[in-house]
Amino acid sequence: MVQEVSTQKNRVEEINENIDIYLGKFEEEAKLLDGIPGISKVAAAAIIGEIGTDMSKFPKVENICSWAGLAPGCNESAGKKKSTKTRHGNPYIKSILCEVAWTVTRKKGTYLSNWYWKVKQRRGGKKAVIGLARKILIIIYTMLKDNQEYKEERFKEVQMKHEEKREKKLIQELKKRGFKVEPQIA
Image (cartoon, rainbow, N blue to C red):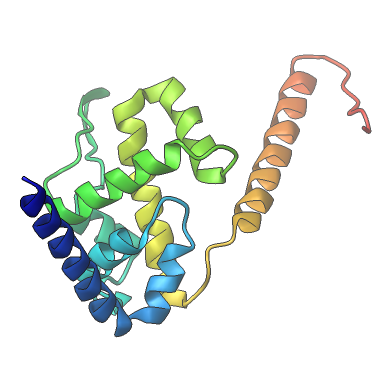
């Protein structure tokens, strides 16, 4: 039993060494992906192994989402919604991204985890994880295509702009209904 455990440990070390050798060729891309919350060295290696680093084979972000099986279907006819299931895609990348998404949900205070908890309230946990996996794939696509780092500040700026737009819409709606609204300066 002890010998079997030590054999397994040696195999794990050997696999980790092979991952390091493989990632040596894609060190820059792996560092970019490692900056995303929830993505470890092993996940970065698996993602690079599945989608590669050349994003020119996917002309639009929708193409990579569809290829990965993270594009929800929209089957609506005569105002009746039939299904919003995601279609079959690459099962390996889909499962990796879902695992990363589950990891992200446990990190408090990040844009991605906050997004997950908002969507979970409306759509449920499983759909929120698939949506988060898609969002992470879009971030990965953009990072690899434009060679940019993941920066949480960018998302905070976007979130502030969305909140300002929402505030303006709510004020306009109240004014339409006859209320006199003056925003308070904090």
